[in-house]
Image (cartoon, rainbow, N blue to C red; front, side, top):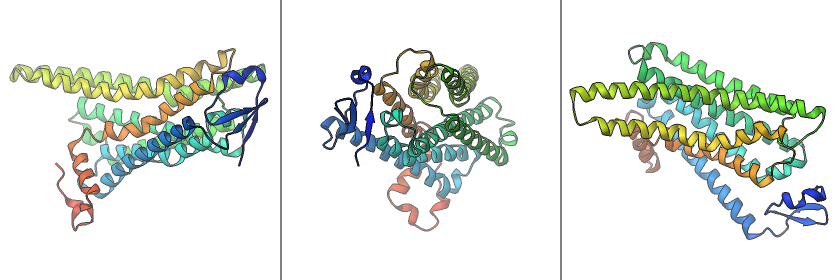
Amino acid sequence: MEEEMTVNKTNVLDDIHPCYTLDNTTYIFASHPSVACLALYVFLGFLSLCTVCGNLLVIIAVVCFRQLHSPTNYLILSLAVADLLVGILVFPFSMSFTVFSCWHHEGLLCKIRGTFDVTLSTASILNLCCISVDRYHAVCQPLTYRSKISHRVVGAMVLLSWGLSALIGIGVTVAGFNQGKCEGSCLMDALISTTLACIFSFYIPVIIMLSIYLRIFLVAQRQVRVIHNSKPGGVSKMERKATKTLATVMGVFILCWTPYFVCIIFQPFTFRITPVAVIETLNWLTLSNSMLNPFIYAFFYSWFRTAFKLIMTGKIFQASFANTKLF
């Protein structure tokens, strides 16, 4: 079914999309998509498949292997569920109803897509924040870790993350949050809703994670120096490993999310609509973080890799697989 969108003549050259064609002053979805359009959706479909498969492996591993039933892994499980739902719900909606389509229309499907997008993306970010808190206690306070980070505490952290994410997602949709340019009294409403959404969904969690990981890194460096004093020669390798792990964790996250939120937070102050191609590219960059999370937070651990091999080779169907020693 063709979807028609009328646009202002002055913006025609700014809003070119590979899957739409221009008919006078009206954009219509191309009945014969271009090679670029087909390549775009094949690529996005591949990202969606990788996101679903990667996070599904994490979920099966944590659920099926008793050795992985720990507070830390339950947080990773919650993260994987959020990222899996991003791959199942947000990716297809974003492919079918692109930013360009929802840019000019505020129909029910666009609102649903926006709610899923904000809620699940925020849930993913907040789960990452909870993981950083867990790692802080494990590294910086190892003697009190088991008493402070219990199953009950982890359950409360997970419920809080998902509850706050749903509240933000629904609130943003009800407030009519959008990425377009508005004028007059609309400007203040857009500014308030945009600023609040960005602060609670991104900036506060990022500040918390940066502070925590910096503290973890400093403590790890101090521990390495202690080890170096007793075992000379082994410090450089441990320092490189700690630096590489923490740099990867925060580097990938910041790379994926910062450009989008920087663009959105300044959108109400601009005098021109941000080009659709820019917004769409930044949006997909943020979603790609859900695909990368399983590699960052699971593939770094040898026991997860062992579990993945058992799952992919079908050995989990053998008797007593749940008690398999992974480490």
